[in-house]
Image 1: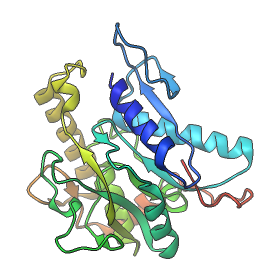
Image 2 (image 1 turned 90 degrees about the vertical axis):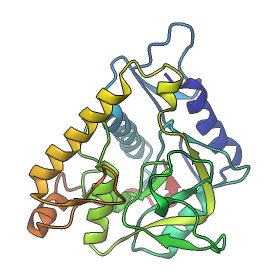
Image 3 (image 1 turned 30 degrees about the vertical axis):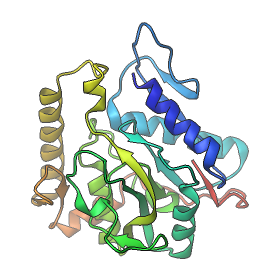
Length: 272
């Protein structure tokens, strides 16, 4: 139900990004009577399958493209319509180049502009005095135009589809990356704007904000609490950062273990 913001993202990418990229817009059950879906839509879902499974539908389509056309993706670039493409330049290429330069980088995000809301995660903003080529290690990333290395992302099963509303999937993946000796970083030279809750403000959500937030938080607590048996919340917010049960984490790292892409690799630079 956020056609304007989906168009903003797709058009920003198509206009400015020079790096090889395929754009897959997933329409997750839009039901606006007076507006068609984004003109860039690749997948139209009749039902709203919730945030995480919307992302997974895009990833599965990307894998189908990889098989059909014989190329491998180097990374998955995960967006959501709380994000906006606000730069008038290519924001993908610097992140892709950083990922290629350091094989230990599992995920890299743009920094959040100073007018992004809410200001809950200070590590996602630009570090004072940082140069445009710096990258900053952080404890976790949010799925706000985050670039995940495909080889590693596939090996952990991408996202857990049972974490329907998306609370905790990015934090859990960030933890699994750090546990395996990988890095999750924020690039200090490219940015996006985040406006949390914008769909509620535009009366597009078809859900009560408080009730959905409570459901998402409880879902995260229950799933990750059972999976890991303990943990704590970082930055005073309801995002889980696991600190214990390494044997269970190793088991989790092997869930839905993917096989490395063996197709032609001229396109190992390609991003979806």
